[in-house]
Amino acid sequence: MPTGLVALLDDISVIAKAAAATIDDVGVAAAKAGSKAAGVVIDDAAVTPSYVTEFTPERELPIILKITKGSLINKLAILLPAALLLSQFLPSAITPLLMLGGMYLCYEGAEKVIEKLGGEHHGETLADPISDVAEFERERVSGAVRTDFILSAEIMAIALAEVTGEPLLSRALILALVAVVITLAVYGTVALIVKMDDIGLHMMENRRSNAAKALGRGLLHAMPRILAVLSVVGTVAMLWVGGQIVVHGAHVLGLHGPSDVIHAVEHAVHDATGTLGGVLGWMTNAALSGVVGLILGAIIAFVLHNVLKKKVGAEA
Image (cartoon, rainbow, N blue to C red; front, side):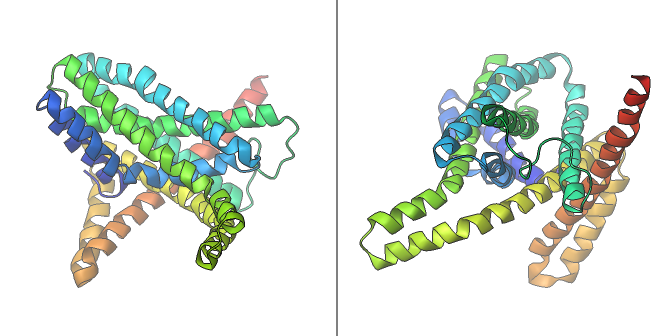
């Protein structure tokens, strides 16, 4: 299994496998799943705050709640039944489907990079005037739920891989618990990030302690920079995760070249950097996976916007 987010998500498979031992272990596994949510938070916590910008503070939590509901629907109403059906009747389709999801993340990340570099913007951006607030909100929630669907698919598929030998009911219960715990952990963290500036303002206006007021002022002033950094982190994470998913999937399907090259460079860096080898090796793997994701995403974006779009326009 590759390092990085996919490796962190792989811990969920350990949780799922432990949960399969007995019914009592399911509750323990669900609690452990919350502590393992850090891997998913890297993506969702980085990307989701961008979907609530340009809204008034009183709309932020309702929008996050809508995204949370969408995420639960993704996992429990769509992905859970699909995962159970695939594991029962077509397990060989799981890896190709994961790779399609990884390609989507690469495409999304590459489009953001292209736009930052001055390329053409596709769809509405934060710089565009908002003529219909309700429609703008609907589109933002829809975009967040679409991105969540890919990450949710990775979680469910990785957990499923370790419990395919269990009875159908046990598989369903384990996957449902993992899905709920991960979703609440992720979007609870997102809500805290988004409301941090309001917390800071409340501390400035209502606390008597100078230290508390100073902390509140620091939170308030820091949040615009934090959100800007998170926007960049979200783009990098999509490329990194998408690239790793595709490279790992290709390895599973028999195309070992990209995976072997990345792991060879990772091990070379690890061996050459002594006590920092673990960290720098991991960073090397993530960086190379991100490069793969950027190249693949840019190719997909080019085909969609310059080949298929022109073909459709010519036919029309």
